[in-house]
Length: 148
Image 1 (tube, rainbow, N blue to C red):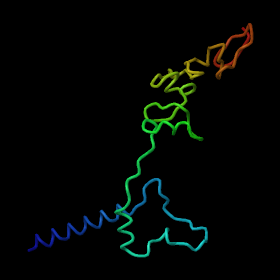
Image 2 (tube, rainbow, N blue to C red; image 1 turned 90 degrees about the vertical axis):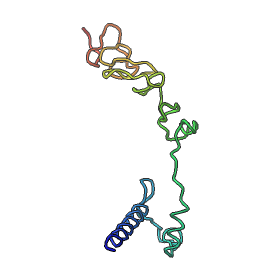
Image 3 (tube, rainbow, N blue to C red; image 1 turned 90 degrees about the horizontal axis):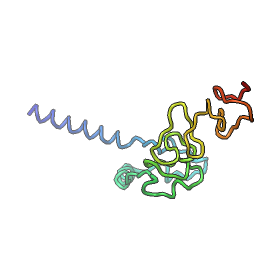
Image 4 (cartoon, helix red, strand yellow; image 1 turned 30 degrees about the horizontal axis):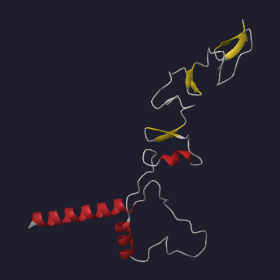
């Protein structure tokens, strides 16, 4: 009989824990809803416990819109770049980890300029930054054009 009471208590505690975990908002849902004083609270606050349970059961997990499934995501405004590499939108013309093509990494001291890895510390055509050319007769030393 004592084992039955312990088992029932364990089941109730597990049910309570599952309910509490399912009621916490996910990372993309706001914790507090701001109604801006419009008085319409029908969407923000359910009126009964049955409403909470039916809403919880009706929710479907939200899938991330990744560019491997939806390539147009990368062309949207505010996207980091128009190219899709390893499920992320990047610009292969300027990205150090995908320079010129997906997966081509530039060395630690190099940057990506128009799809090519260059060393801005010593390259006369890209001295300190992409397309920062040193004038004729000068050298690129430590990312600065100097006459030597």
